[in-house]
Image (tube, rainbow, N blue to C red; front, top):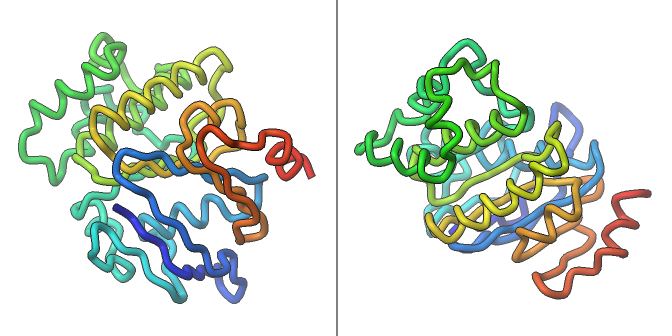
Length: 230
């Protein structure tokens, strides 16, 4: 569904991403792990078009979207949940969700769909986003992304600031979404236990390059932990 080929991305004169290659297939989760400062967020922002590529290609369902603006990528089927969630704290839950529906044709169907996935959001639909817990805000951010009916869902460190007990619930939710929506999901993370529960493929990113790759069922947790703790 999404293919990244020899991607190079810079901030100013400094190249941050050095020739990244990977594919995210429909109905699969690709997880990218790495310590802070290794380029995870830069890579995710380049996939949604916030950071422009110096070279290389990003292909969505066989269409080259490398030069597309962010809003055109969203319209084409890429949804992004940024690090820190960035919900609108003064808007209600339902108002937040509607901000993700600019290109959605059947808004009522999509609203009911995300409420079926996140029933707590339906219960709190009139509550301001800023009054939700961290875990509820993350659910809201994901719901806002899903109502755009994406083909690819990008999540940047979704467990950040969330209690460990809620992290397990988040893993179950993402696994359910993968099956229900048949999406390609790309997620960056630092919490290994969470990643092991959701990933079909796992990469370790260090200094803008992939240095390790594993597959579901054969993930070498000790080796990955050594990369994350250096």
